[in-house]
Length: 319
Ligand SMILES: Nc1ncnc2c1ncn2[C@@H]1O[C@H](COP(=O)(O)OP(=O)(O)OP(=O)(O)O)[C@@H](O)[C@H]1O
Image (tube, rainbow, N blue to C red; front, side, top):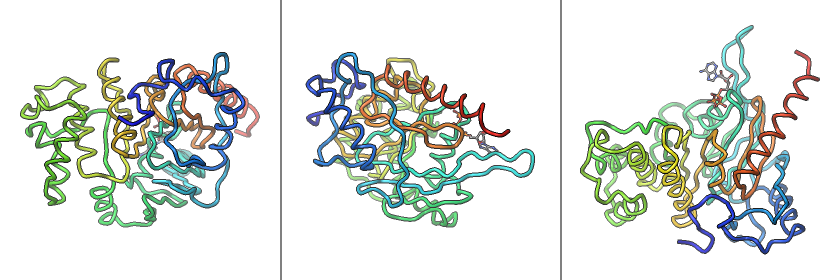
């Protein structure tokens, strides 16, 4: 496990207590304005703010170029569903850089565009306007065949409903992306991923013989087995009890800290977001703010602040 890797949410046990208020606020400000990379290139330490200092969400600045070391970026990302009276602007010109080697959580009220953002970044949906770059490749104008190839080779997925094949064993489900891509199984990697999710003694069970948490850990292993550039997880703990959720979230965090992956997770749960290095907040299809090294209370505070700001804005905007 890496130096700063706790596999735990960013909470009181996570260390970082020596950071002064001045250092802390500078770190948040600098990171917000320098995009996704730390000046020293080091892993971001997880930890709470100093006593009595609650992290504030930082407004997201408007970048023009992708920040260095991003795994996925969007510029002017717009998605409009329907037309006329029923038209919905699900994404309204989003500029975002997702950091390589981080667990990023995406939060926001229901209907704020979280899933649409994830689907556009993952090549599951095409934007109405704007650009998306994943691991250096512009994907927004790819055709369906190109997008399918991209998803198979560069992207891993974890869904709320696990989406395992019921007739296959856990081991066969984990190997599925490699089998579909007709790629050989690297047995060392397979063993390492299985060990990391703690499924050694469940490999020959079918999904119906596994708990929800175990099924989701199979899904996590499946998402990682082909060494994707980035893993997108849509409400990965939405169906899990708190203990299973903690296991899955710890694994996602460790897959970043220890195995070097990049993970983007949509979640409604402040507890889940507290496992992330960074939380992005969406409202009304716009990226409103971000929080670094969050803890659960800071996420709750940020959601409250953003909700008040949103109500104020809605009250002053023309209908
Ligand atoms: N296929 C679609 N057709 C029409 N409207 C859609 C479609 N998909 C999403 N929308 C609308 O786009 C907006 C954003 O939806 P999206 O699912 O991205 O939000 P969300 O933040 O993920 O919501 P939730 O938290 O409830 O899952 C919503 O108003 C939704 O009704």
